[in-house]
Image (cartoon, rainbow, N blue to C red; front, side, top):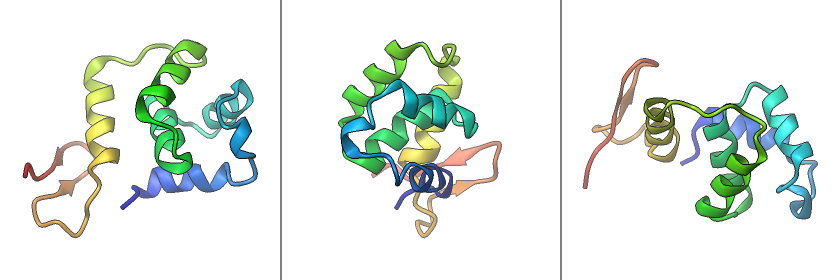
Length: 102
């Protein structure tokens, strides 16, 4: 399941042609929508089928965003990549996140 924030950003990019997803214009659009560097990477990966490694490499090398502290990257990655609201082991109150390890 895709996290609502990531889905919202994906929907805003629906008019962008697949061949143009890995472009500075796309990243500037995401930044203008308030996306963090980690959110941009996850949107490109989950929304457009780009490998997580390729998406992260592109976003990181673009220098559109300043670097995020590692704790923020870790938190956002857990929050967005492990979104399972129907899982009883999952919770997210906006400050803390709990995911099931299986």
